[in-house]
Image (cartoon, rainbow, N blue to C red; front, side, top):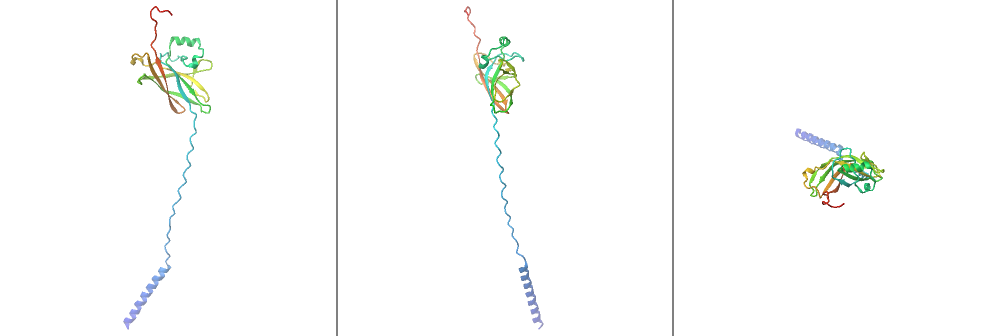
Length: 219
């Protein structure tokens, strides 16, 4: 009899345990699954505005002279086509006979829509007819051809809408290392900086041997 009672007690405990488990299972909330959504990509930044075009300044070497060094106060001789058409003063004519200054002439053009700027000569070099560098020449005394037919001191400033004819005196080439320099063509090359950029300008220069008349020739 005792065994029967124990059996019923065990059955009741098992039933209670199962019922409790069923109730816990029924009352326990189901887990919530959260799906993270990817953030949309950030919009691409607008393209940068194109840089404003700056009117280009054009520089050309219109003439060059390879001769002497007449000193820091010497003004250039009138050698280019426009200047030759002008009448030179007696003072300049006398200076030309006394000393022929090594120099270079530049033509500078800036469109009317440009911005005022300044020109700087970075270097001037001389090459022979085979492309061999003879040496560097030092530029100095920038001058500008004025409307009254004279060269005047120039501050190297460039104004929009104008065409300038300017000149630089140069130091004398180192001819000591150049045998038989006559009857040859040389190249004078300069690097100028204007509007933040470099420009290379050059000009051919011919040096002819001085001619002389034979004895007894009539002039």
